[in-house]
Image (tube, rainbow, N blue to C red; front, side, top):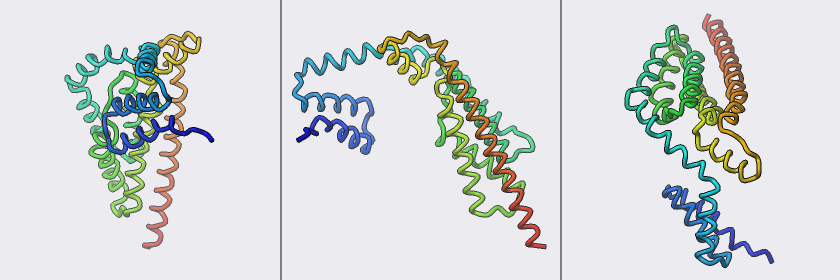
Length: 230
């Protein structure tokens, strides 16, 4: 019979995340509990944790970047980004969302986090996209309004997820470097982040196609509604 007790760490992580406890503490506790269940001594567990931290020491390099990012935010880079989005002339939902998508990629590339859905999409991008949709068609149904909001959220997902590794000091890139180095593949960060560019560019193209199709779809529906009213 297979002994499944060593997998108890997964349950610890699941419960800890569900209770929204400190992520690092949950993972540490899960590792210790798993080691104890697997009949490892405390010193062996600490040795394994210490070795893992040392082998992935590149992850701690992001601390050196924090002062620069904090300085940029202190001098209002985020506010300037919001002003830039708000100043779009002859706006349409597609223009607003594509502009935010591009802005998200640029800020990711310099290591600045705009906060994503809670601080940018919901209070700024989505309302602007809705206002642009209303300007194009004053009779904006609830279904269309929800589609505009979903498209705004989509711009954040495409803009953030597919450009996280553009910044040379990003945690994900540092983790990949540590794993590759441990596996015998020597890689430099200045070479690695270049390979994130194709994915970022492809995501821009895909989102732009979605935006174009959505705009065309909206125009067709508006035309059909006008014919029905006539």
